[in-house]
Amino acid sequence: MSPISVMEPGGVRALGRRAWKVVRVNWHLGVTAFGGPPVHFQIFHEKFVKKTEWIDEQVFQELFSISQSLSGPASTKMLYCINLIRDGFPAALLCFLLWSLPGAIGMYGLSIGVSSINETLPGPVYALLSGLNSATVGVIALAAVELSHKAITDKLTRLIVFFTAAAGMLYNALWYFPVLMVVSGIASFVFDFRFIHRPINKLVATAKSFRRRRHPDAAANPEAPTPTTSQQPTSSSSPSTPLSSLPTTSASTPLPQDDAAPAAEEPRIIPPSHHLPLRLTWKTGTAIIAAFLATFVLTTTLRSTLPWPPPLLYRLFANMYLAGTIIFGGGPVVIPLLREYVVAEGWVSPRDFLIGLALIQAFPGPNFNFAVFLGSLTAINAGYNSLLGAVIAWVGIFSPGLVLVHGTMGIWSAIRGRRWVRSVLRGVNAGAVGLMYTAVYRIFGVGYIDEGFQSGRSLGDDPWWVVITATSYVGGRYFG
Image (cartoon, rainbow, N blue to C red):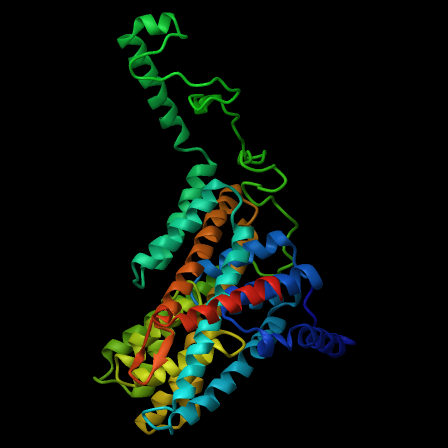
């Protein structure tokens, strides 16, 4: 896809046509895409794979893996990359503004209203906020189930989804979620390339040899039972068949399919596809990532070396920049970290934080717009201009993920065809879907807000909210 110079005849008109195409296709997403990243991915699949056919299924799965593997807002990065591939950087930037600004403006306006309300809210308001959280849990659960159908390609990916979901529910730390996704990628890589098969074959052969030495009569008469084995019905595929007898694979042949489903339904890895129409080299991508890392080091260094305490607005920017850099998994994961960065600092009260949490679930667009709400309240409580605080927080939390994914796309276009990359992404995909179930569990645990527990309680404390959650799931699944 060749760049257009505005000095060429018709260059301005061609650029205008591209901009209009981006607006025409993307304008409604920022005002209609409710439910957070899990639901956004489903919306993008329907929009860009099935309807407009801007990308195919394989590219969608690749972008899903990249968006989940890098820090920052997951669904925002994916939408940015789709438009970057299609029409270049100007289109991607315009799409981001269309996607993020409607929700950001709405959250800014609500922050002004929340800053002027009484400490105790009327009962119907608490009920509305709890109801929004309950319905959101059902919608996210539905999106996780539907994405599981695409991420689960065999028994291994099914296990990865289960274990990452369980592990995410049992423990929570900043480093924990990215480690789970890395382990998922390593697991699929080791399994697909059969690194553990040869040692297992050796162990099986050693055990059989030892058994033959201890029971020579049984070895001479295989039909006779031995003290260590029991008779089993014969079949064409015995469990004792050594793995060495299975067909081997090479870099030029697809990996074998799981026995549980036909080959056409469960490909072990995503097959190679067409070349990405992206005019971004790996050298440029590497330079962009290196420049970002330099700004990250500079920001964190200044935060620790400036006279203490540093200016509040700079600390706000540094905290949001740090959050946008170290958060993996998108909006559901950023919530507990932002709680530490603004509530623990005393910038925003726990009640206002939970009000904003309920409101962002009901707002379209990226959940990272929650930072706009918190930045505005931080500035108001400290006596600064609220709009300045909102803009600082918005730029600080979104810029790391977008810069990183832009640079990564240059590297990705050079390595995406390699077999080991596709294998690793298969596991990362499954791990990211598993963490969506973790997000359902975490929001369920703090979604019930009332005058007596403004810090949030489990929706399970009142069966009514469980019914609301189930209703939103059933309504989305079976009634559209």
